[in-house]
Length: 610
Image (cartoon, rainbow, N blue to C red; front, side, top):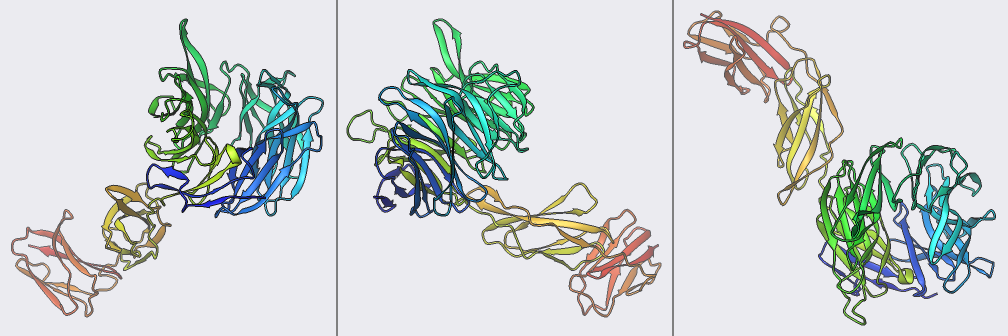
């Protein structure tokens, strides 16, 4: 077998800025390998699914450094049939599940025969089991899911056929156990009617239910036992894709015609349903010509990203809507004058950045002027173009894309099933302070401490009584690692936490908060318990003298409050201050409190000024 691994030292791609670089490029065995899908396992190994027209299904595992670890294939033993790949997922054990189907016929028309479902060992690629299914009607397996118990869900179409190069069929879902045994099959509604259309998307909800859409008029929710919970069979425009937002609402993407003859155009359409199937709203989006939806992804805050294509020569159209369907930003990728530019697949990361791969311009500069390139772009949540990566050496179309846990990206091209690993500049990281402790705990004060964080601009400290609802906030310079808190209540439990504010060229980057820290202030001490200092004369009208304890702690403060709680005198005594004399001749007559506070508690004396 001949494998090409091209290091990043060889120029095979153009990045529009320094935020992404092509780490390596690895080819499958021939130009005829048609790249279909790529997924990454928890160790960031890449699994590329491909097939050869009139040939076999291939699955290739690569390590993060691009080394091919193994290749598995399925060659149907029936000479009159050939294989087509559809989907791959990694299960809870790290094994790879592959779905596809066999076809028969050659030339201008061919026809599906049976589902092919396989499990391969993630370690060495050996076949664990293989199942086929036709049941007297052709069955194409198209979509795959696996749950937390290792069960497998296959979404495909039965009564499958091809008419004038177009696929037709009715939806069917099968659930398999981890050993490949069928648990249940669903291909009819409760009235015994077929579920019309080829499955266009299939996803699991947070509760384990399954939602499936078709390209005709169906959207349905199915429980874990294969029972239909609700079913819409009246989606007028069919569904190209759907996604589920964090609240469980469903956003669908399709297209439909609007206007009156002769001014009819096709617009992208988005509809929203609740998790229980209640229709909420529908809206269409016109960009001045014919537009078609490709994919939709929900963001983290209730909105959605939609990508599709349109115009006379197709261009990429990507836009964002909020939860009410209000359109926000739009990005048009139009870099070619003589050919269609079409997005093929979109994914998003945890921060709501989206990544799209497909075919587009600019013209690579050789042979026919209609030639395109493999294009991969990244947009931010606010619609900013972060980077563009182009590849033209081995393919002119990006087919699939996935994200690895280390912030790298795997993209697969159509020809050679070429797999490319892109490296992104590491995002700035703001570190949470550690080394937290509380000391100098007194009746009404304490000191909070933490370890300095390199690059910190500020620290944000939150504290409150455990029983309080609202937090109090303090900001501390990045060069400081302690904070004295005063005006606390005696004998109360408090909680505090801290996070770092890192300044990144004027934009504040926040760390996560630390774990909660707890402390309890000391009870209030009075002179009746232990008289450690005295005030005389008392009453007084000219001068008072305060006799202090033999040892004064470094954090001690001596304060005098008037009858309305105002501080009228405050000093931090030194250890050698045995007594402090204060002129009170100008003080209004009344009762005053003299408070000596250190990290062991509070001592209080009362004086009467006449």
